[in-house]
Every structure is written in C-alpha cells, then in structure tokens.
Length: 164
Image (cartoon, rainbow, N blue to C red; front, side, top):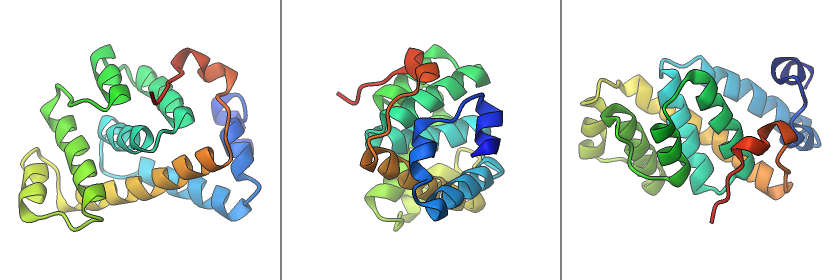
C-alpha cells in the first residue's frame, strides 16, 4: 500500500478496502504489475481494462483508467468510446476490444475466426494469453471494488462515470 500511495500521491479507497484480505491485495498488486509488463502496448492494455471495467460496472476502475488514458495522451474520442463500451475508431484497438469480449463470451474457447481476426491486426498468440491475464486481474479488482462498495476518491472526481 505504501508503494501505491507513493506512486499516486494518495491511497485509493478501493486499495484500502482490498487490504482486508492481504492475499487479495497482494495478488492484485502483483498481477496488475505483471500485466503492465506484458508485450501489449499501453493503449491495448487499457482497452482490455476498460472492456472489463465497463462490462462489470466498476465506476472506480473506469474513473481511474480514464485518468490513466489522459496521462497517456489518448484522444477524447477513444476515451469516450471506451467509457461508453462502443466500437473504437482505431482498428487495432477495436480488435483488442472485440477479442476481449469474445474471450469473455466463450470462457476462453474462442474459435479460429476470432483468433485470426485478432492476429490479423499484428497481435500474437502471446498477446492473446496476455489478454486473458488482463481479464483475470481486472475481473478480480472490479468484483472486489463492487463487493466492498469502494467509493470514488476525490482526485478521480473529474473522471467520474455512471454505468447507467
């Protein structure tokens, strides 16, 4: 929690609430750090995260990752589409979004057409497995944030999101 506080300048309420299960908190922090080190580029990783966060209705995750996209210099069009769960104008990122949805819909049993469509945009079989990792990590955090009714932290208020 100290490293999170140092990195962000505050301790997010969601992280503090995860700490009631030290194993969950440790697992999330380790796995999210590993996900950040995958071969997926930052915008592709954020596309996976947003797809999970909006699907699972996690207002904390959407706000936090909206702020992260802004820091990455993402376009307003991309941010708005991700927040709304709409198709993305960038074909490569749209391939990530669609593949993530397909992995979720099939519990990982994506067919050859879905895999080929993903690979056709320059992704690899390794990237496909990294999408699975992102799904796991951010399903864990979105579920925990919702279960603990994590509030939106004040620094994230400008990025608030309503699932409705």
